[in-house]
Figure (cartoon, rainbow, N blue to C red):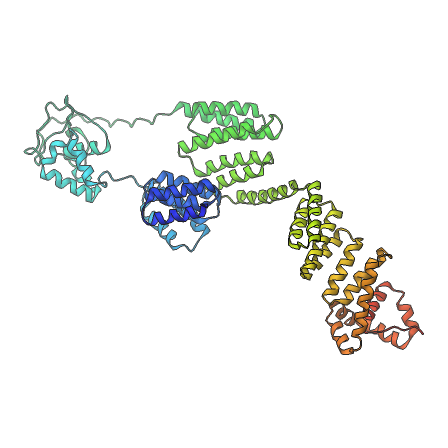
Amino acid sequence: MSADALKNEGNELLKKNDLDGAIGKYTEAIALNPTNKVFYSNRSAAFAKKSEYQKAHDDAVKAIELEPTWPKGYSRKGAALVGLNRLEEAKIAYEESLKLDPNNAATKTEVENLKNKLSGPGGSQPMGNPFGGNPAEIFQKLATDPRTKNYMSDPSYLQMLQELSANPSNAMKHMGDPRMQATLQVMFGINLGADDQGNPVVNPTADNKANQEMPKGPKMSFDDMDTDSGPSEPKQSKPEPTPSKSPEPEPVPIDEEKEEAKRAKAAGNEFYKKKDFDNAVKNYKKAVELDPAEMIYVNNLATCYFEMAKTGKIDNYDQCREYALKAVDVGRENRADYKTIAKALKRVAMCYEKEKNFDDAIKWYNKSLSEHREKDTLQIVQKLEKQAKEAKRVAYFDETKAQEAKDKGNEFFKKGAFPDAIKSYEEGLKRTADGDCDMKAKLLSNRAGCYAKLMEFHRAQKDCEEALKFKPDFVKCWIRKGSVLEAQKQLDNALESYRKAIELDPNAKEAQDGMNRVMSLKYAARNDPEQVRARAMNDPEIQAIMGDPSMRMILEQMQQNPQAAMEHMKNPDIAQKIQKLVDCGLISVSSR
């Protein structure tokens, strides 16, 4: 079964919501044709429908790698990223799709929806609502945690949970309630204090005193915490504390290793500018050891090794590729900016380009484009695709196989199998190097003979003209062109071709026979002057001669003064034009 048939079966299964079956069919199709973007796109849709969003994302990225200018690949990627709750990246993917298909209404709608959801600072993704999940799961979590399980029988507590689920901002007005403190600890997974049995440390309020079992021996009191409102039950009077100066906020601790890594990178940059790549590498490696989660340091190492290979300090680009790929892994593990990841992938492609491995270079440039579409990279890919095509064309040249193809075409021609002969001559042309003009001329002339036998005279004429560009003294091709023009009733042009063949080879009997044959046809047609004139004036060359004022004046002089005719005929250009008029029957020249 073909890959397309498997894809169609997968589509039908997807319509029936048989997701596993559809995925299986798409996978079989991919195994048969791993370069078809549609198969990956369809499987991505099936994975997304099955809520396996990471697999859906991976397939979408593969589709983009195969064809970076296909808008649906970016739409699939956006859908998968929404499922992974990576909304900012999803919006970027949908916007890339819109750049390629600006009128897609569905994609526009997705972008607008994501803009509404990205309500955080600067259009970022907001933090999640701990009370916005499944109510049953939230209540189960609170009912099983020792810090809140005793509150679940309290109607006022349940009312408070309902308010928070409807509007999380209501949490602030309940911050004075110890139950709120305990609830937040459970929902955010923190523990500010507990007794010997692991129960929460809370103080009663007037609202909850009668409905909750108080834990024994609290270790901390929320009375001493800063909240928007204190407990509703009044506190016992306490002596006023002596005012004291508010403690200074503790400074944010500095990560010395990261700072040292930055200094090592800066030193490496200075060495790099001086083209002291050995010391640059030492400093970048030190930075990587100090801060292994920063991909820029690894990418800088790849850049150094690239320059060292380019200048001949090392033998190959293997180390550059190794560190560039490592930089990609580090970047993805630590969610680095997609532009930086694209830069590392581009470095891999540059290595292959330097090695003249255009296929792999194009592959890795396209991977870079799937992360970030950069105009310069697109132009490089287009240039390399042309170079790769030309390299394959040149690599196909083979003089021996070209001769074999010509001989095979000749055998087909003798048998009258003209279409097969044409295929053989075309194979011979592909195998013939650009500089082998003699072989190219022969193959083109032979193919022209096949076209003539098939009555495709325009193609035959074109092949003859191309052959004569490669070999202007090719007598046989001049004769063949004459016969083709004769068949098209272009008698004057046919006569010129036969005449050219005789100039090159006065003993060319076939050319002489053709010339005599054409002359007989021309003289036979002269019995009807109007027909002769009409046929001649359809020739663009005749039209140009007769429209030239200087030629009209020369013709008038020749008619009035035969001696002037002899003088004009000494000019080769004028002589050629007059001969053309004679050949077509418009004028006649007689000797006196």
